[in-house]
Image 1 (cartoon, one colour):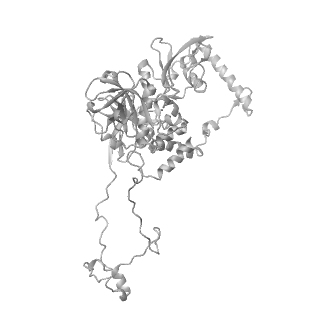
Image 2: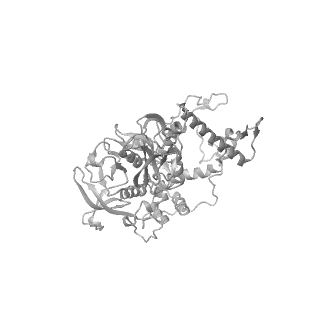
Image 3: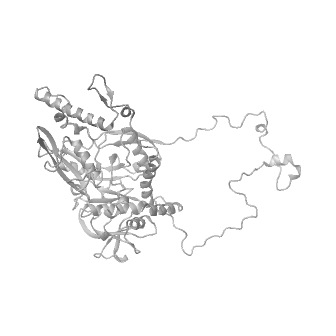
Length: 529
């Protein structure tokens, strides 16, 4: 699939791009094309230097060149041409060149903290995210994104990696702000396109074989005519009422049918254009706009700042339908630019893979296994013997800790005490948050398979809850404590698989699916700027 898309990308690079990512088309049929004139017999290549002498110097070297074609023009500034005269332009006489324009941008994190960053006028959203990742000491896994948040309108969207931050900020109101957040689903449709585009919602103007590659090529190729169709709840402009209409999305814009599900041109009415608009998600559509469902999105013209009357609000029946509409709008608007944004981190990772071979740290290489059972210590060179000695040392440490606990002088690093608090140091643990808050975090950071977080249980103070996303649905699994031989363990499957702490539990289910619908893959994280 990548090979065919790369060929499509290479072909698109030969054509100029317009500001919306679409390729410029050739001359219209029947248009007159000017034929180039016949070139002279001796042509000079562009890379070949041409020596051009001044007219006065030619005349001085060869008096026969004084013809009518080379008139003698008196020098109006003879004092500037003498060998002892100072140069016409002294250093510092010209004004300094224009410096690169800079601007301060304030970015907020999920916990409410903010950071003011000085950026250049041509800095893209990807560049700013990489700068914030570097300053916040985060792991750059190419899933960080900049979010355009409008609290007064109840809208937000993730900026595309190629968008200019200063240009986007110029269209925002004073109450709006930028958020720094994870979004694992930003380019997930390139990996699993069939999960984003149901067959009943996609139609093509030409015959398609229905493969993953053909599906993406039809969206990225500007000559194809893909259509997304289905029923949506549409809010009337300037009114509070919603109507359920049959809607189809094309490259020219979003249309609704005035007669059932008919797509005849005389029955189609334009709802919104994608050229000078952006696609947003509704944060609280039911409360703020009276939306019939929780799966609302909006097409907002770039000129609109505070006027909610000019917003084109729509609602889908479920999350999969909303994701299909929003993703199709992004693909039809930006085209091949989205695929280029997706491939840049992949190519960079492939280039650095040969230089980033995993090596052991110096401290690990300097550690050796020792045996002090005799009068003098010795180095254990046999790996099997070294592993056996490590296991025996671990069992002896546990026995000593148990004996100290019985005597009443519990060690501060006792396993039973450490297992109850060690998980609070992990990024995937979010403490005492509600079920609704955990679902909101999962939705904000992308509904992809394997996205998870852990939190305290609200019904059982000794239990925990694993919140997991699978097939764009959020599920909750309770982690219950259980005792065995006086020790406390944690289990997801009623004690069949037990773990001494939550870190071991997460590590296990990242490698094994077990009773879960899928393995744990991505964890929700909040970073303080």
